[in-house]
Image (cartoon, rainbow, N blue to C red; front, side, top):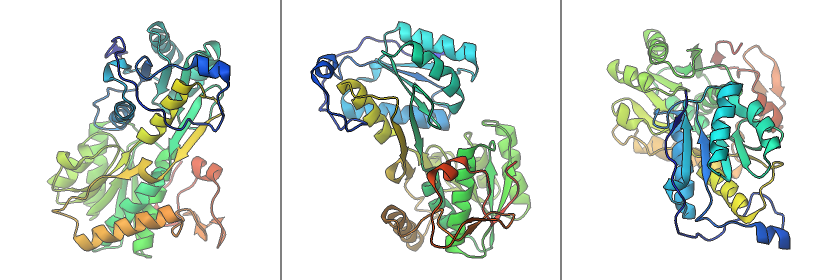
Length: 369
């Protein structure tokens, strides 16, 4: 099912140009082809609703923030919600947006990539940006979520009185495994004896299954856990049972203030600003791929009632150490949980292997396949 949220005409306000997503210098024809921020129209395709409390909300809020920073009225955004990851649904959503004259379409779910690639090739005047791996005809974008999740695991291990933490996963997909492994490596950085018990919901969004995942971990005596899930079920189940967690996708502290230490937040705003700017100044290229960490792999404010100041300071220092390269999250020696050496001492895993994540690191208890 798809739902058109807003279709409005663009109104005034021109923002200063930012750097485009390529270093290409526009020629005279490109200068003539430029549009301004007051007329750019953007389409967004989401798999759930934009206030789902999870992935779709994080994407939507990032896009609105980018538009606001660039001076683009929110009325210039057209959203198609509840679009299934199948050909007919994606084509219908794409055609509806094309009919509204959008300049840019954001595909907010990796499952749209194959279909949008074909559609984009037929309509080169519409730029399409797609979350996930690089795909032909699309600007690709992804966040190094393992950076923020490393901090989540680090904080959890510092808080925990035992060596065993938990992690509630959704579907076994590369970015999810990156979150799990990042969390486990952060826990190990704080406590070399730390282990992370993994449970799977095998669903992207299911309140009952996510609730059961949290209960399974809690029933094993685990008090601190990470998560890769969209509903409020895990934080709220933790709160009801005296356990604690790191929120995911968006800041979840308000949903369970007695359980959420802080949250990992997908912050696509810097990426979206660059993509939109490249569309406006005529330099957008489907050869471009964004793979960003830092403030894109954001953590929310700490829950002051739960996280001691000394632990907050340690987490923030670790954040700086990741940014400076002092901490290499996937640096060697690194083994998987079957004993295979993935990265030799002194070396760092390539982005290609990080993106694939066909492994779980050695201190994760569980299987990825």
